[in-house]
Length: 233
Image (tube, rainbow, N blue to C red):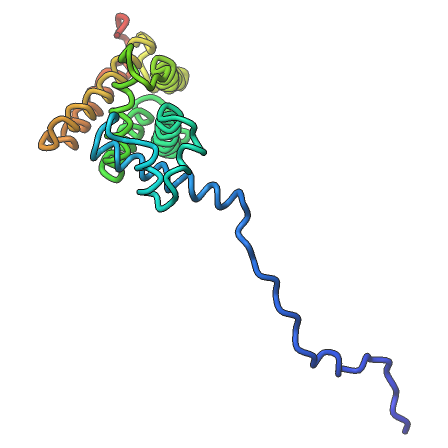
């Protein structure tokens, strides 16, 4: 019986040591993203510690662990830096709210947004404080930093009005509710509660938000069958 030959390649080459894996180098975009995050976090800390006037580009660069000139090079001015801080903080808050609300509508959506805001305040208190400092700074006519705060709040009210409208469409919310007026009142309450807590940390934040949720559920609930409701603001 003859042994069948195969044409398998000699395995000697396989025994050669593998080529060294190329050294992975962090891309420039990754390094920039990291420095942006560290600079923003440093700016938030300094805003809370020293206020708007006491936060300088040089101090931000040093606090972040970089050169004094990096923040100036990256943002150009304090206004540019503060704009980035507010953009990042607002995006963080919005993302938390959108994730919490998901496909919820009506009172469930408002309650989920309220809970998300409460968690945001508790988990990122410095971010919230910095955001309010910049909001109030932006309405000073002589301030070095200005933002179109009216547009930010208009977008928030629009989201809330859409949640209410979706609840009305599904029959979860009284159709007599004026969604635009209630959205204005809800957003004002949300902003006011947070501001009161920032001014007085001993205020019962959780209880205030629970009361707000109870009020919203009461005002949004459908009228009992057979009762014609008047428009609710």
